[in-house]
Length: 199
Image (cartoon, rainbow, N blue to C red):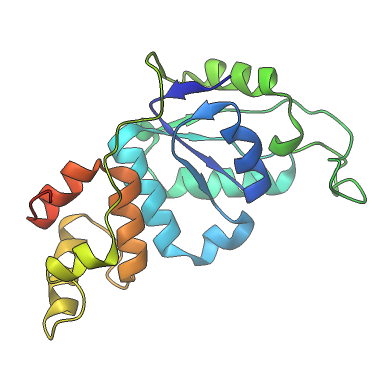
């Protein structure tokens, strides 16, 4: 049962992402828990995804989840955000030896129907259509090289100019830039932005 939705979804960790990816077909970005507080590249990826397609914030219902949610709210304009809240269900996830500090199940412990319901309540845009999104082939480091963004004497300046144009952090690595291009744009859009032809 895969539901296609337009918005990207922010979750805390990889187990949340695994659970959610069995329910929805969309871009799911991990905040890596509190890692988001010291990772401007990840926040920039969330912001760019939010601007391109909207972002649903789906964190755990414990205190930590709300701290992470509030951080995202403080960084990304409200017009791009939707908030999905899982219910308070007490218990522990199967993979964990003991329950979390507050004893509540996180996103990974929610049944598929509950996740679908909270996304609907959050106002997710459900898309019809079969199969995964048509994104084209992902860009590679080779494409960045061809575009002059890596491996050349002036690559750093060219990358800086592109990052500035996209309102992305100036210290973003080539790998992080590649992730933004591959997750927030279709292959054709990304190639156009880099001024490359599709091969």
